[in-house]
Image (tube, rainbow, N blue to C red; front, side, top):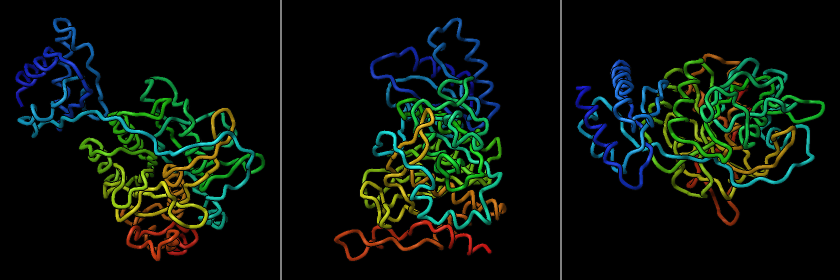
Length: 384
């Protein structure tokens, strides 16, 4: 690709101005081309002040600009060298939460999937999990021994401290370890790297998610928990998920909370992920959960108690909560069988799942959801 032509068209786009500017990601398929263009744009900043608003995304070889809508069509001639797409926002997948609760010990979801049956054999020891979310509360007593260093893409340079609560809740279900005074997660000796891509409102741009996945790949984590979703496809996100899976990292993603029967959110809809729907304590699909053939496994997601900010606890519902149960189960599995690849893990989860109870008023739920609910005892027995 001719760099001078690229720069000319880019400057045209920026100078056109107009209403309704949106954030776009320009991703370079070749790292050296990215470096050449980035350097050239830096040199032009003095004569073109609008370039000062350019944001670099070096981890994913991308540049971020604000342009009028429709940039994808206008830049189609560069499709061999570049990926151009709107930097969409997405939200964490939670339906609601209550005020703090007094419940302690082993939460019902952890018991329901039979995690305590596994702890004499495996506790997830030394399995490293990237939780791409709102960060985590490093001061929470239940997470004191579970959290490692992470990264903050919302406020670069600062620690990934949670300012929302969702990420702390997810971390607690996966790996809380305060047997005497708090709660215990599915894999109490697993280790979590908080990746803060979501702000205090539970919102994130695709580019920050992609950077988070890339960070997990570079740091050779074992699995990634992604309790969030959006309705539209993203080439950048798909590329990052594929890269993680190819690196041997299991990517666990929530199906979404729209009660849809035939579709689920992205990135869970990508075949490279392990997609998770939510059940209630009657082993039925939770009313809010997306379901259907795209879901790989179900797990408890209704009225789940876990850690919260400032040492507190909250009850939350959503496919986010279900996803954290599955991530914890995979940590238990990988501590025993570290050689397992993501497709093998997915196949094991599906093969050892318990049948879903029929939805109330229906004879059977198999048409809606051929997948079953996770059973850790059966999962681990299959591997012995």
